[in-house]
Amino acid sequence: MTYQHCFADGTPVDLPVGKVVCVGRNYAEHAKELNNPIPAEPLLFIKPSTAIAPLAEPIVLSPSRGPVHYETEIALLIGSRLSGEVSEAEACQAIAGVGLALDLTLRELQDQLKAKGHPWERAKAFDGACPLSLFVPVADVPVLSELSLELQINGTLRQQGSAEQMITPIPRVLQQIAEVFTLLPGDVVITGTPAGVGVLHAGDQLQAAIPGLLAQATAVRG
Ligand code: ZN
Image 1 (spheres, rainbow, N blue to C red):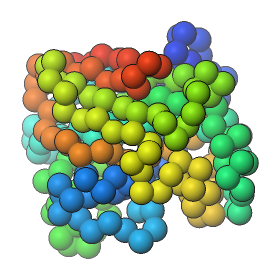
Image 2: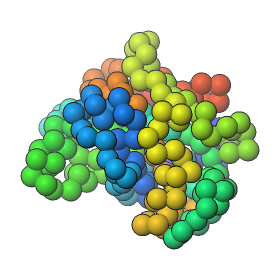
Image 3: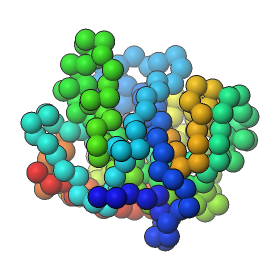
Image 4: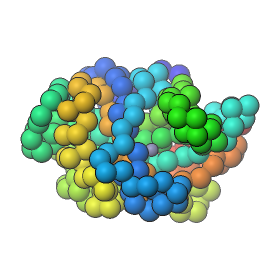
């Protein structure tokens, strides 16, 4: 299953496939539902490029490793290098496109790793752990801070959120990341998930959307 960044009209984006920098606990209601404190500064982690898969391809579960949870997130495709101290305007100018990600998580394994103080990679950075949708070119995105997202599973609305609810807004997220991890063209930033996360089951039909801009369906295979 090869992956290449593509725009919403299906044309390939002329950028390599880089790392994914992820923000945890960026929506207060989601932090609460997992009994996590709200962090004082953005909680950051990374998925390698090998975790990326096309969202349109079916999600394959591996029951021997435990249940896989979905977290639907707004994804930002980075088009130019961001490093060190950058202004909010520079951060926003580095965005090439906006799409959707699933931050797939082996939640039971993550809980075990957290309890031991171990890193999360086995639970969040495995192959296929970051399905990505097509990307809407940023020029077609009216207002970044008004982006919203939705996830329906088998026709039932399970997640709904808006960038307005983010604890750390998009420009500030990029600034904070760039101070620590240089963002390169082709990298992706995923911006946290709203409440409503849960387990995926074989046969589930998922419909993820940025209402008015993008919709993508996928399915779960056993
Ligand atoms: Zn997440």
